[in-house]
Amino acid sequence: MEKFARNEPALWMIQLFRVSKIYPPNYPALTDIHLHIEKGEFVFVSGPSGAGKTTLLRLLFREEEATEGQIIVNGRNITRLNGARVARLRQAIGLVFQEFKLLPSMSALENVALAAEVVGMSRTESRRRAFHLLRELGLKDKHDARPPTLSGGEQQRVAIARALVNDPILVLADEPTGNLDAEMAEETMRLFLKIHEKGTTIIIATHDSGLLRRFQHRVVLLQRGRLMADSKTAGRSMVSKVEP
Ligand SMILES: Nc1ncnc2c1ncn2[C@@H]1O[C@H](COP(=O)(O)OP(=O)(O)O)[C@@H](O)[C@H]1O
Ligand SMILES: [Mg+2]
Image (cartoon, rainbow, N blue to C red):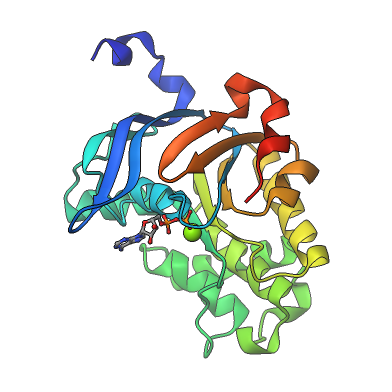
C-alpha cells in the first residue's frame, strides 16, 4: 500500500496495481498488469488479437471484474463495486466500439439524446445537447437519418457524439477504426484528438500498428495478457517493434 502514499491521486485517471483477469474456468487473459495513466493523457493500447486489449477496457468500465489486483479510476477504487456505483462509474465514461452499436430504428439525434435521457437528463436538454454535438462533429444535416442509411464514418461519429453527451472524464474506444476505410479512420482519429485537446482522457485499443505510427502518442503494448512495453518509459523506438 506504500505505492498509494507515494502517488499523487489528483494526477491519475487510471491506476492498475498488479491486475490479473482469469476467465472461467482457467483462462488468463491479463496477467500482473501495472499501469498508470494521467488525467488528460491520450493512450493507445496495442497488441495482436487476443492480447487482452478488450479485456483491459472492460475492466475499466466494470463490464468485468479483476481476479487479482486493484483498479483505481479517478481516485476511486472500482475493483469491487455494487450495482449503483457501477452505474455511476459508467456515467463518467464514454464508450466507442468497432461495430458502433447504434440503435438502427432511431434517428442519429435520438441515439445520442437517449444516452443522456437514460441517466436522468430531461428530454429537452438531452435533445439540445445531442443537436449541438452532432453539429460539432460535422453531422448537421444527418440529425434525422437512421444509422443504416449513414456511412461507416458517419455512424462512428454518431457513436462518438453519444459517448460525449454526458461529458465523460474518460473515453474508452475499442478498435474504433476497425470497420472504417483508411480515410474515415483518419478522420475519426482526428476527432479523438480534438476531444483530447479539450482535456478528456482517451484510451484507444487497436491492433492497427499504422495508426500508432501516424498518431504519435503513448503506446502500451500487450502480448498474451502481459504488458510488454510502454512508450512512456521506453521512448518512441518501441513503436517500430509493434507488429500485430
Ligand atoms: N468472456 C470470455 N471468456 C473466456 N475467454 C475470453 C473471454 N473474453 C476474452 N477471452 C479470451 O481472452 C483473451 C483476450 O481477449 P481480448 O481481451 O478480447 O483480446 P483483444 O481485444 O486484444 O483481441 C483471448 O484469448 C480471448 O479468447
Ligand atoms: Mg479486442
